[in-house]
Image (cartoon, rainbow, N blue to C red):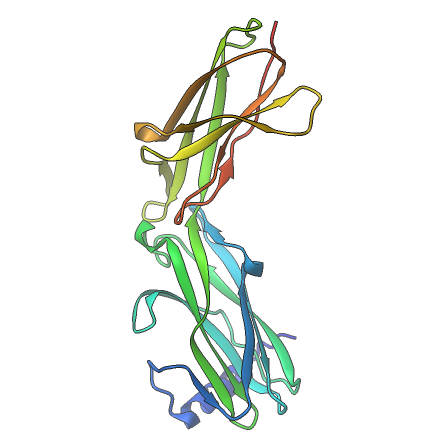
Length: 254
């Protein structure tokens, strides 16, 4: 259950103040409060494009006396040297439930948090749970997750139609979100992508060949056409950019 009242937030602040918790601290536990799990975006990477998006983090904690406050913060860098942070929109509490799952929301806005592309990659979550009897647990790195730049992928096969057995040129381009400018920009050279084909009337895609991007993020390769069907590019992504699949381009073979 989630609680949003101002009183709930105040209770959390009072409990923290009473414990005199410093701004930076090692993991600490007081009494029998336990943070059981912290799950970001249902366990998947967080993909951010050129516009704001909201991310949910679920913090599950247990204490026999229930909770005054449960909260978390997203951050980039080490705990003692954070270069970007995102606070939750509201803490959870109070609740008398001995086991509580708090669904916290975080608003990510390219250009501010994260400010630029250098902040893509591994992020961490610090979390705390303060019980009604002032027992508490604080975790500096309760979970980690990947914050990735969104990816767009295009495809274009020519000529259309193509004669049976003749060469077909399949082009494309990879673009990634640029968080500083708020627009998509061409990916760099050397990014791997896979050309896939699905024959007409079939549901399964098969790999045709691999290719890497040239300058400007462009893709180009040739294949011989033997059957009607669709072509598309598939990009696996990197440690800082999201995976993507292009739309399909149908080619008629005569």
